[in-house]
Image (cartoon, rainbow, N blue to C red; front, side, top):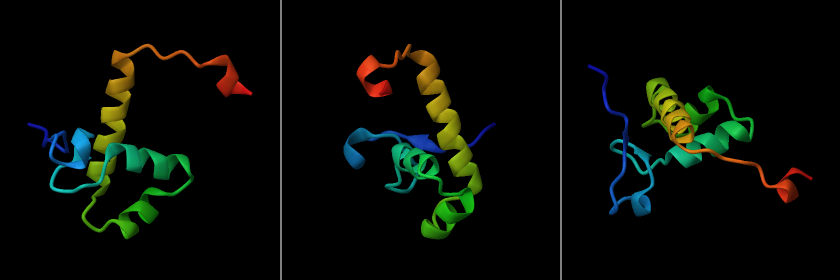
Length: 78
């Protein structure tokens, strides 16, 4: 059975999905990766994280996007 890494609690970070036992949001992890930080840099900055937790955040984001259809807005493409 796979360990649950991502939880959402309205009392923690306004209910945003976080890594269990932390206040580190999936959003923050994605922002850091999108900004060019490496997994190693993220792990160094957040010692409570693990490589598995970061992978779980990516998997969570993939599943969240799969559930929705997202279309780019023309103005945002310029």
